[in-house]
Image (cartoon, rainbow, N blue to C red; front, side, top):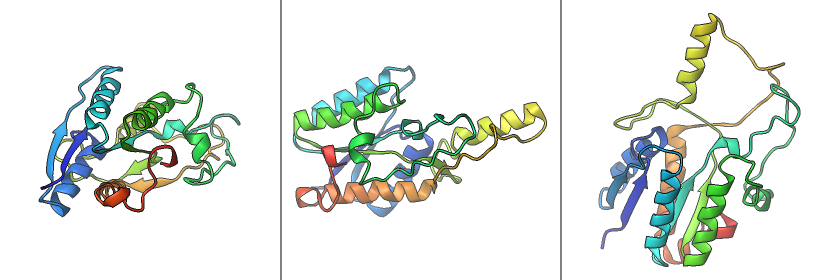
Amino acid sequence: MAPKISITGSSGYIGSQVFHDITEKQPEYQIRGLFSGTGRRRPQRLHISLLSSLQKTGTFIQLSGAASIASTANGLGQLDPKIWSDVADLKETTTFDHGHMHAATGQLVLSKGLKHGIRTVVVIPLAVYGIGQGEIRKTSMVLPWYIDAVKKRGKGFILGEGKNIASIIHVKDLATAFILLVEEALKNGGGSADWREKG
């Protein structure tokens, strides 16, 4: 029986790339794209509904945002020496106070996963770049915002001293990571991926 995959945000930049790549790589999967609509609370309600419907039979992979670990503690444009680790900092990144953007949603996903006995993981990429191959959105939201700001000012700019740094990932590489997680989830015991409180 072919695996059934639902992708929320499948019209977005990252979701549509995942949709494009997974249908190309795994044509036998039964895949449906879900649109979460607009409004601040709607995506969270949709995620709760999906998590509850899985009931010990599935896996939920959550895309979070870079704002989860962004820091301006030293001021805008200043270097934050902290280098986050997927392994060493896992406990901290999954228990941030809710002042961190996206923290509440990520923690909700992990706690509901534990409650319902399903595998969950939260993926937190930083800056995502590249032209996507999805049908609707092909670029990130950030690049158009920056270009618009440059046009309005008539020149490029930096924040503060411009010493801040961040990791970047190509949208196709990020989609590959999602597909790897899906493939691992379909293996006995969830394959070699770390799930729930370890993910």
